[in-house]
Image (cartoon, rainbow, N blue to C red; front, side):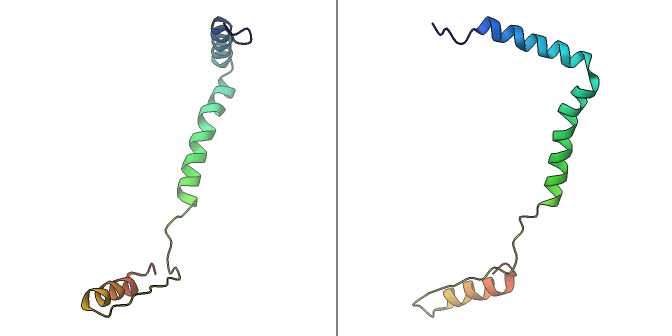
Length: 79
């Protein structure tokens, strides 16, 4: 038995907080609305599409497959 944690006490505090959130609509709206707004803003503001990365390719073969892969990398715009 854990003397520092009581499940019934935790449930009572959780119920009290939900009742308090129901009373204060502005706080509840901020708790729900602000994270959604942040998700939308950061989702569109952060661009993880990388372009023109410096890339080094070291190969010991000059076959047609290697040339095709290198040509594809050069025309892609990512490397």
